[in-house]
Length: 302
Length: 233
Length: 104
Image 1 (cartoon, chains in turn orange, brown, red):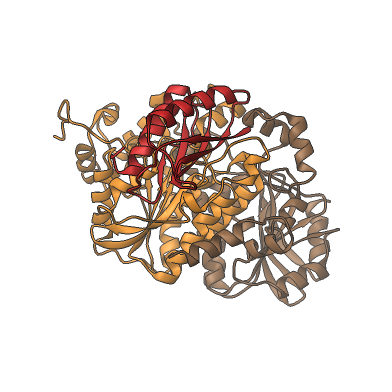
Image 2 (cartoon, helix red, strand yellow):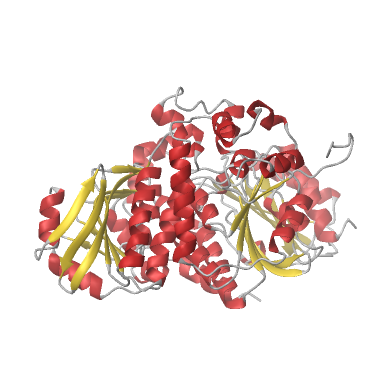
């Protein structure tokens, strides 16, 4: 099932630029950019460090339609400085989220592709991420769902990993990665035996889309193509009711996280977690296509 | 200053605060009545245990003592660095902790964070920077990364970073830089019950850090960008 | 970083879009923004590049482009992260194609 036809041109989400993702994700000709390149200047914080910078500072914001619904969008460009958040980049996101609180679109789609704080503007980036965190929660409290779409080459790491998990729901591709510290950082600090960042398969078993889906940290899996991200996002939004922030909901999440902490204590590889979840042949998970994995998850205990 | 003498100084009317590992939790008497005291000590690395420990106590507080103000004491070297922590989505547990602080705010709890030691990256984001207002002691160390490591990663000469840090608060470590940029409300010369009471009395639930950063001359671009996005056609 | 500015005489471009943006400021890549400029027989080029000391190569690559395409009445802004001349030429063609709607 889902066997890819040879010679069919697929548009990989992982490889596409942020602009190409938006064009392919949204309804045709519906995208309208806020603060477009022709009205913007590259960040002076980068110029002072002798770095050219980009007109959009690595993030594109605007409005468009998804399957007919009015949405606001944020798309980080992973190819520019790892999609990392600096002052202008962060303020564009905060501004977009504030606009969502005012205009009440059907949703905000947050196409995350970022290593987190831009070290060249470390303080500005950290503070901006804190402001984004609060703005995401304010947007949700205003009744506007925020969907995170993770499948770019930089994944969602550092503060952007936290932001992603503050969203109403996370959609990932198998190629997407979601975590806090990057494997390279852990390897540098704790040693290669703790985390071998060159072991691609291991990195995906710890941070990748399939693992996050099986453990419930991402709501839905998409194929590595814009049309499928579009379909899955539209499907999630149909009939979505954004919950009011409540003690009951956070109690339930606390129970889920605490139970799992105990249940999977000491495990260090996705294979072990999947086995503990009841997957009969965990070694097959990396080879499975999306639909088979979705079926597998449905069949797991609980 | 030891944690115990810090607590004595901040809460001369009394406190009952326990330390479990590096997690701090308890109750104290501030000038205006009882407050919850929560946080970390000894440059704690925040993993699932501490994040869920703090989150659970926040949820208990919201349920059992509606509206009671919260004092967060922040001393964190950042997030715990291990494969096992990441395997269980450490960013998710930190996000959960941040949501609990946010819920407390929405339910009417005022909150103040005081950086007593270190405040680094993910550990700082998850609760210290989620408080209504954040303060720092004069000898606090607030940073993402020290300049030597930053020079290695960015491939910009260390001397150049040191030189630029003299004129720009944007990237170099230091509580003063965070104050100029609006994220730290004030730096206290030393721990003080009077300053804490004043801080608790003056908190504002809105996020005014961008405006403060512009007023103080440390963050001159962000606020205008937000306005431009709101005004865009 | 080096900032470069050039002007070339060229036949007038006929824009289809108000502006066109092509490329990303990633390693070995660049972004090119084309928009209307004055006067109608001149192409103004403003470059920010991470690589110093390649001014003459930039000038030659863009002069050749301006000689072969109607790019008069445009302003071209480039942010470059070390793209090769081949990549620069390719992106210029793509950007101009978007700007003129393919009618170059």
